[in-house]
Image (cartoon, rainbow, N blue to C red; front, side, top):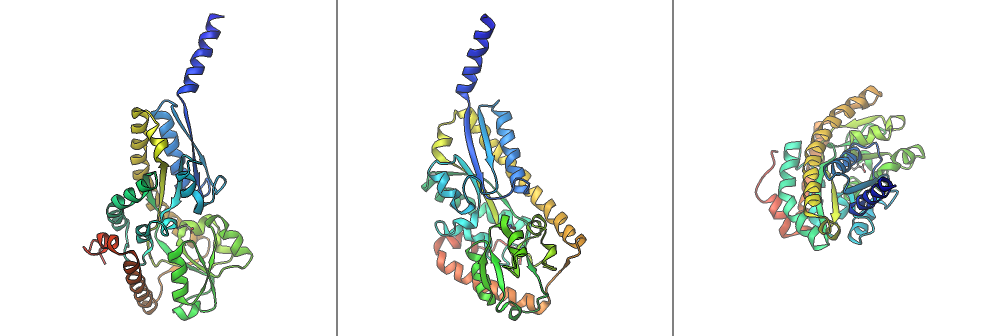
Length: 320
Ligand code: PCA
């Protein structure tokens, strides 16, 4: 009898000390980003001895990708993951992630993140949010159902977009932008809603695009990052030990995620070839046109962002 009472008391105190968090993401559970987030949650569980339990809610089930920032700000979900460029309306500096042909390697992407991070932290703090870590998608290439030789080939076609930058690029190419969430790309292709898109090889693999799309051009246009973040009040209400464990797990998740992204980049490009897609570069003349378009895009971006853009672009940090 005594033991039963003691056990009940112990269980009650564990339950009392336990904090439950939800972490909303817009990507599938089997995406490498989500697997990394799930590992992060397990690490936090282990290193806090179960004091902080984070339940990952993938696939837009809790909130849609574009609503996650607001939901975490409002405390409806304690934490979340979104693609940074979805925040470009409120935090223009996030758009640095999708400027064509500035960042051409993981090393460059890391330099960009180091420059952006203090600005992102400031903007997040102003909204009661704490960035935990960011991980890039593999380089963005061009998927097309028919071979493309020049911008003229896009005129009158439909290009799938996932943020403001891809919308602008579609416009510059004379294509009609069609906004399709990543988890619906396969469906959109099957129902003939899109002819091309700029995204990573892994996104092509996840959506098994080879049934409808025959060409993948490795244009290496940019490396957009996903950011995992939490509600500041939720972080502040953790005990110092638990908070530290959360931040340590975040540092590890960032390291692990960058390595994972690089592995996935190679493996999925190979997979596209194995599935019978034509994988290669665009012609030199088309590449030159794309670069010119990228420069125009950069100029527009720097003008629209103002001062903060200079932190990133005035000193020349990237190898081109
Ligand atoms: N995949 C996501 C974002 C960038 C990427 O590589 C998408 O296509 O929506």
